View (cartoon, one colour):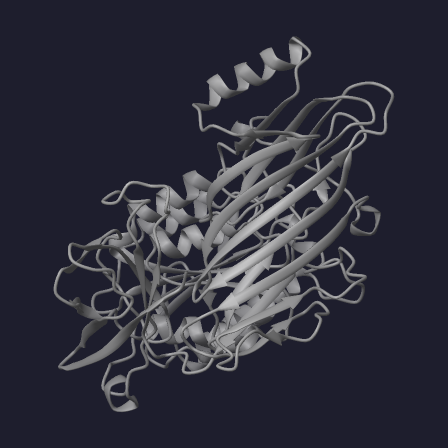
Length: 531
């Protein structure tokens, strides 16, 4: 799963097995890491790897011989002390930690593994899958964890990561996926070689697929999953745990409602297009790396430049714009945002075309502070577009700054190249009320850029309401906060727990109604069980 490691001795990792289960729009990932100590003395190793920043880790256990150890969640300092105490007394111990600076970096410490002994580590997490411009759901298993740049005042405080070439990774990967949905699965695509898709029922609502044999660690394992009738609302019910007490979160069923609206063209054409577009380009040294580990690929800065040029040529006439770039310092093309015209566009295109990865480190905070200090233009909503490989260690600090200023703008982020920080890219978009995209090549760059621009040019849907039409004796309690923003082509999920007093049901109806200007749309979503 990773090609960047920080280790104390020879890495005893032998193989990784990954099982992916996708239920409509949510994925459960189970990774089993198999270790073997071939040394003649006990061994400790630290394995550093990426997880999606918005993933929820729900299980961590270790099996040594016939003994299984299930992890407990503890305060970080207490967990470290207990781990160190176990090692000093000669006991076997395992420690899983999230980075304090970035929620998408985890380190796994495997301590005091005896000579000749094997151990299996099981890690399970859950994540919502993002919808792409072509309606596909994207799952990515990172093949790289890029070393993160630390601001000068924080040097030495983050997780240390040193690179190992992909071709020299000493362990194998097996990967399989099972997909189920109320709608038929139309296809599953990947940049990696897959075995043929296997359907499990005649309705084609369940299917399995595996990574073809011989996969090399030269790229991320990316799956794109496509359903028929992608814009039709769906509601999936998952049964509660049989061992849990009824009336509790784990004991009651949970409903997931998926909203992925498609508004009539007549409604969208009536919406005025305007705004102030501020484009922020990462020109740090790491942007000179290749977008992935394959030979012949373009560099990250080249991909970011092409993305920025395409966006620049697509802005609507009459809007306002400016372009910033940053590294150790930052620059801007215009002193303040200017009106978009043929003259200003040509000037900006010439400047962007010669931008290179020549500004040093990744000091993104200062240009963001400067942008936010500029007064907004009346009747021109500010839209911030960020293009970066995300190689920073102060991820939480950057996201908090965007969150603090979320009332004055929307933020759209582009992760350039494999290994870009999902925590930073997704976090910027989430807190800025925008949308995140990941660009690892030129194959799907144009639709992704145009999708984000469409989102920026349309207003947020307002007056969203969800009503439940359920049988007598059945009720639901909302588990997720109310939806505040909804764009055409952007999916939102609503979670609720179900309760019943008379009987168990597997069918019902949920109705979602949204308001856009003077138009309203309402669509029902039948409830279906997914046990």
